[in-house]
Image 1 (cartoon, rainbow over the protein chains, first blue to last red):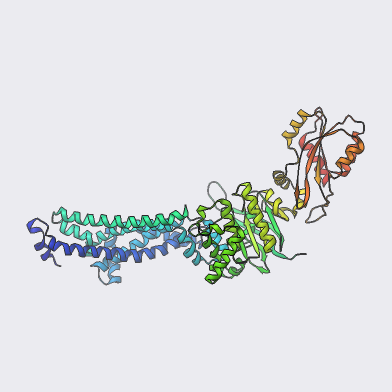
Image 2 (cartoon, chains in turn cyan, green):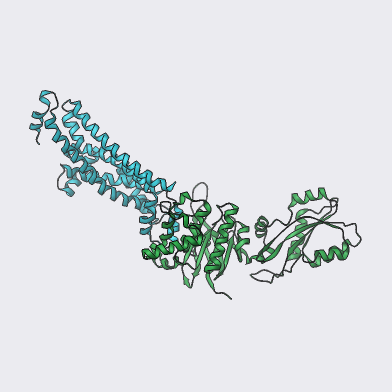
Length: 235
Length: 378
């Protein structure tokens, strides 16, 4: 799809032509889902690992290591507050090295994964901290290895809050994916800007907004139900 | 003589104090040169106020804490230097229960009990069978599929006990296991622990700040204060003839036979005669564990009263059996206008430990009266 067809298809008449827009919209939805899901899968997992390391190296915890904790803590604190649109630009040289290009969906996913990893790590850490140290001690007393404790005690005990944290992350990643359109990542954000905002077509902008709202609502509702199911056992 | 299954040899545990808040840097000794043997089959009570170091001491048995110096030997293996992976087989021989139960909140009762079996790689059908056995033992078969949040405190602790016993341990560590329970539930859990000890032959180390817990099930007791064991011995011996003031304070919480100072003042208000407390110890205590020998006391009071014809009234007292023998104190008001009273009191003193609080018109100060008797006991 090049710029010329877009112009011809949409704005000249000043009215949305959905026979052309519909496949574009569907493609955008697919691109958004691809970016969000791949990012959540990879970044969510790496963030879980990093979050467990952050939690574990805290003073008094399983892998207590003040030096490692403080180094990771500082790195997370530096990366997280960078506005994502600037982070995208700043990451460009590294993106080219890793992905081979700095334009397109794959190129957008890389910085998203990096940012998602750091965001997830902090959320995971914060949700592991309230886990009762007593149950971890009980598992240690039974002879469970540290890795077993993480897998079979720590994460299950924090599962309810972790599910809600990942739902929260989904929204954050969706937000990132919208900005990824800026570097040719496509997706709903790009669709809204290119065919809605820049063509003064509010219907198009709002159709993208509505789809995003629906996506968020669906994910949040599923997460709430899951978390409720898990937490019901605990309280 | 039973063999020691746990041996502490000159164990010291120091913590580095964190600076800040005007506090200086330095080290705190949580456990200060403790040597202690715990024999197979014992229910060994370790009593002390919070911060006395008893929790730290017991956590060194399964190496949740490591000593700064000294050695800890459990079931013939030195545990203080072992790596976490080498500790695993030993930890499976040591069950542990906790004040806050520490059950896994997202696992059912059955899953909680099966957890140590999974760690030990039991076959699933053996696991199920063992879980059912344990549920029967602690009387929770009906609650198998409930989550801990649906259970009462006493039920939670019984799950804790079942979980701790799953892999057939030789030793059970109980860390303030009844402190969060009401008196009735405490009695139930203690009865269960007694059964664990008698039927399964499990050695139990019981940390508590409740002397009545020690009194009810322990056969041995060690009193900890500021990281040191200040007194130890058979429970009856320590109860009947406590040597240290910290021990006396603990015993007073379980056994209130001796009136306190306000009570004595009240008794003086009500009675004109001579107030005399007699300590009761049913049997002699041989010298042991660094304690002097102490004779029985209060066994012939009635005979002496009859012999000298002293008019008497019982006004206060309390007695209990500890380790199968009676321990306590009885307070009389005597008619000291009787000419043979002096002679009688002398005879009573020779026979028993006596605390003379004087009369309403000539009272003896409480501390002086009590100290006079303690001087005699030593």
